[in-house]
Structure formats: structure tokens, C-alpha cells
Image 1 (spheres, one colour):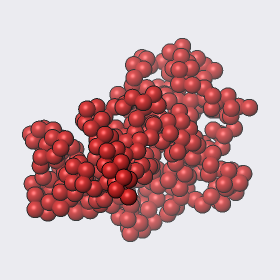
Image 2 (cartoon, one colour):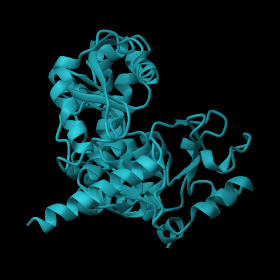
Image 3 (cartoon, helix red, strand yellow):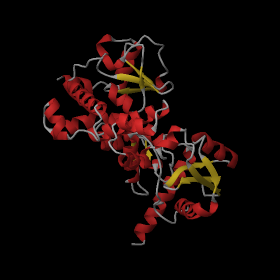
Image 4 (cartoon, helix red, strand yellow):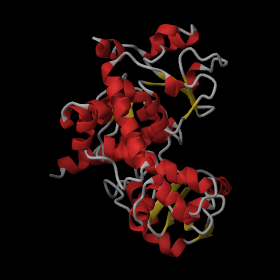
Length: 367
């Protein structure tokens, strides 16, 4: 009964609870403020944020999974939920954290989790994914990476940060760093120093286009005026070695332009992007949407987390996509048929969708 009560609480009722500092809502959810990066209990005595800056999560671990930090004033991690499913998931999170503290190389297996907290492995995994949007293994990977980043930022050596984070071998660490850090751990510790990336700017059907890449793949893509594009790239990677490199990137740039011109259905290029486990899930699902087809934010949220109400999190995943022409977030629209938001304006989003639909129809008619 408690599980049903928790799952049917709408964002509107949660916001009302936050505004009224409703004590009965403590433990049922936390709210995060995008402008500060902090999450709180509903009863927190801090100044109330603007509604547009607020996101809701069923449990503290879900907020931390998205990069938010707990409020030092209301201590939301100490809140206790009456929802049995939430309690079980929090117990699993605690077990994973404990294993990391003990230096485990990898997340505990589903069998080990089931033995620790009780229940069937399949049911536990399904419940965990429903509430957090990721599997226990993905949660463990994200927490280990978070611990590594924190250690590196605090000045620890790569070796110490590696073992403290739960990487049992250097090979495991560098395996993950390629896809999650976007650079080597040593470079990350120095704010990107030592990482080398090239860029080029070229005309495209949507305006001036910048494509930037490391040796592993495309890491940044943007539209705008040349000076703005270069400044934006340097803000993203302030200590990296950034050079103009038209020759090496030529084939990749031509592929992106050909896609924008409708000559190919998708620019199949190697990528070097970093993000949370949930962001990567969103990006993976975006890549599965065929050219000329759209999905709603709710449909994508249901597919990823089993909850249509996670559409705000999905929208944020789309908005933080660093290569949003190659990872096609323009194929996601609102449930009422509206375009929703788009980094480079709704006119460009509408043009992309229309061009893809036209090309899809042409290909279908051609057989």
C-alpha cells in the first residue's frame, strides 16, 4: 500500500508539500535545485527556489546519481521512508557503497545483493531500475567514478584515488576512463591539462558548424558564429590543448554535413562524450530512434525508467547532450505535439525533423 501511495504523488503535490514544508512528505521524496546543485528534504528551512529550477526524486541516491549534493542544513540522506520499495533500494545502495569502501573491484552481483537484502534478484533489479533509472551495476559504476573524480579533485595521486574508489587494477580504471572521463585520469585531475583535441568550423545547412574531437572520437559539436564557437570550446575544456585541425577531422565533418543535407540517415561516428549513467542511458535510447521518427519525452522516460513522470530527467539528459546533432535529441517532442526545447532554437529543430521525414518518405517510395 505504501508503494502505491508513493508512486502516485504528482510533481504538483510534491511542489505543494515543499511550499508548505509538509512534515508528512519527509522520506517520500527529495527535491533538487538545478541552480545550486543541492537537494533537500521537503521540510528544509532554506529559502524556497523557483519552481522552474526544481526537480523531484523518490530517494536521495537518485538525486546524487544525477550529480546533486545533499543539503548540509536539512541532511536529506538521514530521512526515513515508509515505502518498502524505497527502503529496499536504499539498502541496496548502502550495500554497494559499503563494498566500495572495502575496495571491491566491481559492483556486487545480483545474487549477492539478494542474499544481503532478501528477495529475488530479478525483482530487486526491476525495482531498483524503476526508482533510480539505472541497474545496481550501473549505479555502482557511477558511484565508483564519482569517488575517483572527488579524489582527483582533492589532489590525490591517480594510484591512491584509483584504489580508494574501488578500482582493483589500473587496466579497469583506464578501461572506464575512455568512455566516462573523456580523457585519462591524470588529465582529468589537472582540469583537462594534457588532453589534446582538434576542431574545425565549416558551413552547414543549419549555419556555421564546429566539430571537435579527441583521438577517440567526436567530443563536442555546436552551431553559431566562429568566435562564439571557439570561446565555447575553450570554456568546456579550459586546460586542454586545443588546435585547429581541418585535415584530420575532414572526413568526420563531411559526414556530419552530409547528414544535415539529407544524404545519409545517420552520421555513424565514434564518440568521446562523458555523462552520468542516466544521461548515457538517455543518449543510447536517442540513438535508437530512427531518422524521420519522433518520440515524446514521456515515451522515452517510460522506456528508460519505467516511469513516464521521469520526462523532466529525460529532457535534462537531452539538454546536456554535447553532440546533439549526432545524438539526435531533436527527435524528442512534447506529448501535445509541441516541439519542446532545443539548444539551437525551435526553427532548426523543426527543419531537422521535416528534412528527416521527407528523406524517409523518399526512401520508402524508392523501395
